[in-house]
Length: 324
Ligand SMILES: [Zn+2]
Image (cartoon, rainbow, N blue to C red; front, side, top):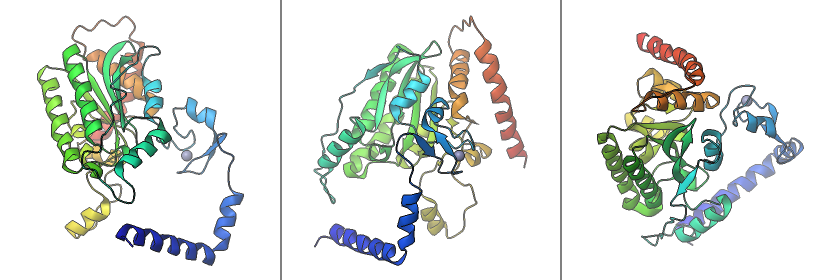
C-alpha cells in the first residue's frame, strides 16, 4: 500500500466513525438542504438570497456584504465593456514537464479540471475596454487547481504583459491563488521571476499596473506580481498572505494578531492602497485608468466624481489606521 492510499483509507475510516457517532448531523444537513441553483445561502451570515439578485449584486451578499468568489469569465463580464473583450492564448495548456504523479497523474488531474471548469488553465488573459479605456487583463480562476501558478499561468501572464507593453496599455491582474503549482516543481517557482521581469519592462515603459487582490491571494503569487503594483487594490476581507497562519505561528513561536492577512489589516499597514467593494470596483478602476491616460480627454466626468467620493473615506481610513 502506498503512503497516499494509506492516508486516504485512514481519513475515510475516521469520517465514517464520526458520522456513525453523530447520526443527527447528516439528517439535519439534509433537512436544511436548499434546491440547487435558485437560492444561495451566505456562508458568512446564513441569509438566503435569490441567485439572480446575488448575480445582479456581483455576487456580494446584500445582507452582510460578504464577497463570494467569482469565476474568471464572470469577473470579465462584470468589468469589461460589452463586445470589447479579446481573449489571448486561450488554448495554452500544461504538458506535464516532470511526469508528476501523486494519487493521480498530474496530466489526468489537468484533464479533470479542464472538464469541470471549461478552462485550459488557472488564468484567462486578454484585452478589452473598461469604461472606454483600453486595458490588458489577466484574471485568475480559483476553481482550476486553486488558481495555482504553473508554467501556463506564468506564460499567459507574461505574454499579456508583453502585449500591454507593446500596445502601451495599462495592465490589470486579478489575483486568486493558493500559490505555486507543486506538480511543476521548480518550473512553477520560475514563473515568479518571469512575470516580475515582464512587469519591470512594462514599468520601464512608464505604463500603469494595478493588481486587484481577491480572496485568497497567497504563496508565490503574493511573492511576485500581486505585490508589484503601482496601485494595489483589494476586495474586502480577502485573505492575502505568503504562507498560512499556523506555519507562521510555529516558525515565530508566537501568536499573530486577529485579522492578520486580511485586506483591511494590509491596508492599515501600508501594503495595500485601497480596499474597494466589488460593487464600486469598475467605477474606481475607470477613474484610475482615466487619470493615468497620457492624454486625458474626459467627455463625461460623472464616473470620476462618483468614484472620487467612494475613494475619499478609504484613504482617510488608512490615515486613521496609521495614526493609531
Ligand atoms: Zn451574508
